[in-house]
Image (cartoon, rainbow, N blue to C red; front, side, top):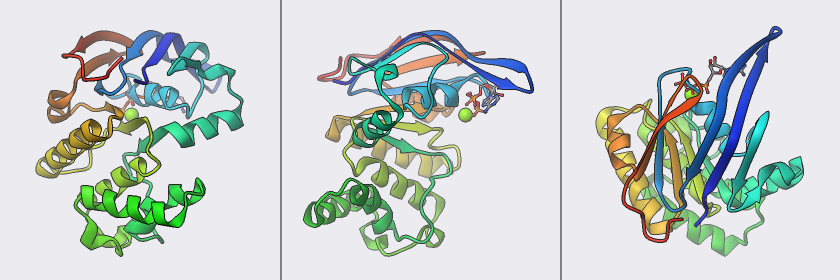
Length: 234
Ligand SMILES: Nc1ncnc2c1ncn2[C@@H]1O[C@H](COP(=O)(O)OP(=O)(O)OP(=O)(O)O)[C@@H](O)[C@H]1O
Ligand SMILES: [Mg+2]
């Protein structure tokens, strides 16, 4: 129940006095409690769009509302607080902390949020179990395979119980079989935890799993296909 609405959103990068329009007049609604995929060729604006929706960057034009809240009304501090409480991120290179074990990586956001020890322990264990890594809890990222690291990153993104999870090309670095297993896992978690997942991907396996899929070309949304409404979606 946490739709994201973009109204006339534009983003232009400035590079050596040259304007690079990365997103042009985007009007879009991302339904809550759904699995949404954004696809398009390299350079079309997918990462830029995810960064704006994830409040990691701000638009130059237009506005973004998350669960009815206009993002631009929030100060930088309020925005990082909002992000920490509501949004999760799975980055393409996983961004795990190399000196921490799988367990500690998943626990880390909970320490920052000052979640009590027992709640932390229960949640980390159940997430590692959900991603099938209970037996690797004590391994550091360097002692895990790419698919296992990706699963740690998923568990970490979910540990603060976000309402929306963003993932930029989550299967790009995985072999086809591992990629399918990861997508099936995310699909199950999305349904069980009633979170919204928003992915960028050109992977047909990812697109097949989507409730809604959107295509972007040269900074513009050129098509939106919506599947059957998920239960409780908005
Ligand atoms: N920091 C930046 N400074 C200048 N231009 C940028 C910057 N980041 C992205 N761009 C440009 O903005 C456009 C959109 O880039 P973006 O990274 O959003 O594309 P993408 O769809 O994610 O591509 P890919 O599939 O290759 O990851 C591109 O033309 C890119 O060159
Ligand atoms: Mg990208």
